[in-house]
Length: 304
Image (cartoon, rainbow, N blue to C red):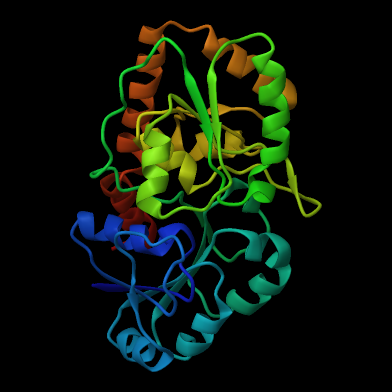
């Protein structure tokens, strides 16, 4: 059984890590795309043009199209293959009706990566969060007396950075801590190092995006948890996540009051309790979002 993962732009290395998850449990999976990533990941999907993609697709049993990519669908839709589409972000959030009409006639199933997409009409909907490779991420550093809280958004608008800054300023009137925040985009290895150098990572606070309900944590939240950080973030569909994954180590803040209360509570914890919380983050990743855990879940979803 050969699986082919294809995208034009592989946002957050999602398709590449998905392929790694399948390979980690013994599935023959190749991942390809047409454009390199600006974040300069240590490893990425192979770069191929449309003609090469077509040739690879002819050899596959299952074709997985990522990020609601119509360009890729048009290359492979006439092939007699099992085709799966992944709806993962802004493209589907803005245009779900059009994308459902385009993909549903050609795909066997649709996999949504965010709970907010539940029930929007994707054909044979399944839910799968991205995998994170934690094999090269070091254990969390010891906790110092002064806690370090950090926020390094890939997009300040999408991550709600202005509001996060405002709330952190309010909290700083009552607590002593170090606040590290930068909107500078850096290479992936440097981003991981920045995250490793904190105790608490604030990933997201954005209830709405472009006038639509949003508030769904992303891959950075998984990477920070894998690095042994307490991750403060948002998920307006937290119950849907728990219904599928049973457990969550993220600190979910869906309102400003949640955010202020949870950060204040964390800042009052002992260093030992902080460390236990961080270790729980890493165990949660290993149990639910490591390559092996995700790979086993995909085997069930794809029935292979």
